[in-house]
Amino acid sequence: MKIGFFDSGIGGLTVLHQALKLLPDEDYLFYADSAHVPYGEKPKEEVKQYIAEAVRFIFSQGAEALVIACNTATSIAVQELRMQYDYPILGIEPAVKPAVRQVEGTPKKVLVLATPLTLQEDKYHNLVKRLDSRDIVDSLALPGLVRLAERFDFREESVRPYLREQFAGLELCKYGTVVLGCTHFPYFIPVLRQLFPPQTQFISGNTGTARNLKAILGGRTSLGSGSGRIEYYASGSRVDDEVLLSQYAGLLKRLDPIQ
Ligand code: DGL
Image 1 (cartoon, rainbow, N blue to C red):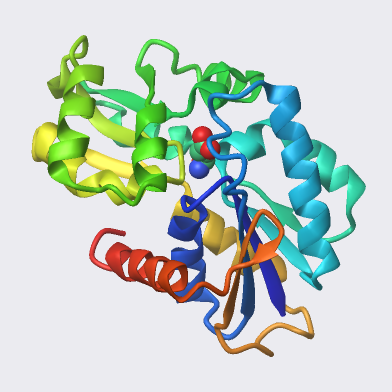
Image 2 (image 1 turned 135 degrees about the horizontal axis):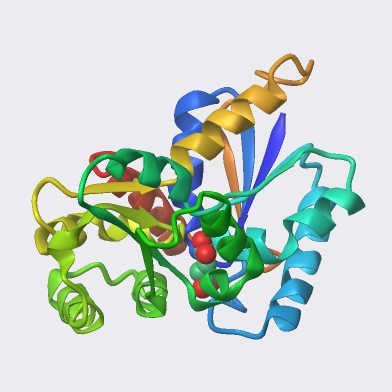
């Protein structure tokens, strides 16, 4: 089966990485909307149009299921897309629920890191409200990490000063669990670990999304008919540039020891 993976940029690879572990015998179409990244700092209506265009393209290429591997796009568009298409469409949301469970019964709190757009959406606020966890959940937007990732800049000397500045007003030792609510963020786990106390947990919705994908597709006749091949698209154009392809492959490898 051909499964589409969509993100504004390279963040979606952190979810695809998990899907490849659970569903190695499918084919994948990975679409990064590189012409319009970052989504998280743009007006919602503009981003919605980019998403609609990308999703139309992905299904036109024969994908039979879609993972919106982007918390921002999920929060603003997943419901409408599900009404428009008959194919299974999965989204990803900040893993607040398991994070709250992890700190329950301890004096620690949860810190949710995401894009400005995700944190300002009702979907996020309703999630926190539903869990009755407003008192123990703090959030912080880190759009600078998306920009660094899109430049393939994961160097400590670039990432650390940015994070130090953003974390300046927070007491990091208060947090038992940090939620990576943007799919670009897992690349930065090694630096994040250095800044938080050693016992801090980092979680994302990535493994849960891959598990849901496997469960939802289970039993379909075309399942298992692929070979783990990945076609890459950048905003509707097939990526055939060897340098970029090897950068993508390098990112998937980089994730192996991280998540
Ligand atoms: N990777 C995306 C997310 O999970 C969005 C990054 C961006 O384009 O701002 O929210």
